[in-house]
Structure formats: structure tokens, C-alpha cells
Amino acid sequence: DIQMTQSPSTLSASVGDRVTITCRGSQSVSSWLAWYQQKPGKAPKLLIYKASSLQSGVPSRFSGSGFGTEFTLTIDSLQPDDFATYYCQQYDNFPLTFGGGTKVEI
Amino acid sequence: EVQLVESGGGLVQPGGSLILSCAASGFTFSDHYMDWVRQAPGKGLEWVGRTRNKAQSYTTEYAPSVKGRFTVSRDESKQSLYLQMNSLKTEDTAVYYCTRRGDDGSGYFPFDYWGQGTLVTVSS
Image 1 (spheres, one colour):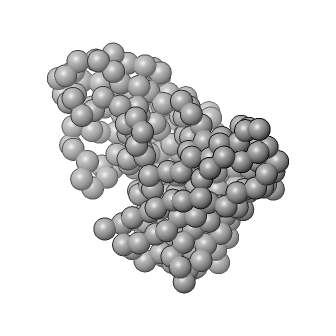
Image 2 (cartoon, rainbow over the protein chains, first blue to last red):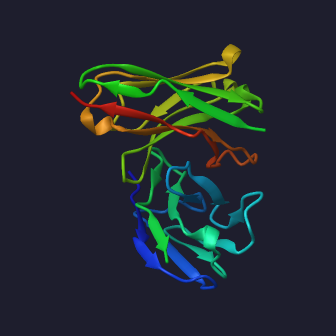
């Protein structure tokens, strides 16, 4: 199985900050890496696919980069609506696997 | 508008069985792979299983933790996805989400739509 490791697990930030979350795979997943946002009691929402492609309707302050085993999610100018938990997910190999999550809090 | 609505969750004893359903609408169901993803209380996301589309003969894949106990199936006439869960364990307690795998023509895409989830509690 491919293990996905996110860091940090918790991130304290303020409105207007630039935030970066890292996701590392135990082996290469090429560009088959997605990022999701989840708010309490809600289903996850797809933000980024293919490592850097912005899902339709997602604000442009979200961006992704990386290839192989190292990936980042960046949020430029953090907004109040962005305080949530973020997960990476590889969809290159079965079993599909998620990172442990990064909670972005005030 | 794409909608995925799960049902069938509840309390079940260890060793018991349960069937979850997911009613899909707003898209051509037979075109898409469909997956189940679960989330234990206060924990992260875990992929459970997949059924591919008609073009791929509805073949399935499973997470090692559920293989041999869970079965993913679909009924095109009802536009519904199912998860048959047998030999349930306390560690299967989770919110179960029905998800649609998107498609950009590459053959690889993550989950672009999720249901609201249904809670399964395995406890005596």
C-alpha cells in the first residue's frame, strides 16, 4: 500500500495568511494526487486533482504542485471560510489512500 | 444537479450484516465508476471499495480491511449503488460516503461528488 503522510497535522493561521500543506507518498504516484477540504459534519469537497489542476468552482487562491512523492497545497490569503481539515489522496494505485489530514485553525 | 443520497445506516451487533444504499441522480450513472469511502468518528478518510462502469464490466476493487466481508454492487435500472457489509467488526464503525469518480478522459480521476454520508455503528 502507498502511505500518504501530511504535515503539519495542525496549523494555526490568521485571515490573510499564506498557508502551505505538504503531502509525501511512500512511493511515486506520478501526478495522480488530489486535495480535499472537509468541514465538521460535512462531506469532503474536491479542490485539486492531478496534483495542480483546480476543480471547477474552486477559488483561485487554492493551488497545488508536485510530482512523484512530494506535493503541496497552498492557500493564498486565507479566508474565514477556509478554516477546515484538508486531506491529500493518491489515486494511482489500489488501495486508494488518503493522508491523515491537516486541520487549519485560527 | 448531481446528487448522491445514502441510506441504510444504523446500529448493528458485531458479526452482523447491513446493506447501505446510495441513490444517484443528475448524471449518467452507467458512465461512472462509483466508490464507498468511510470515516471513523474523529478520524481520517479510508477508501472502502469501487465498482467500475458498464464499459469496464462493473468490475470491483476492495480495501484489504474489508475484502471478503464487503461487496460493492450497483443497479443501473434504479441508478443505485450498494454496499453489502457482512461479519461486521467494531472497527467498521464509521460514516460511510457514496462517491462518484469523475472523468476527464485520462482514465484517472478522484472523487468529484460525495453524498452526505450515513452512520454505521457496530456495537453490542
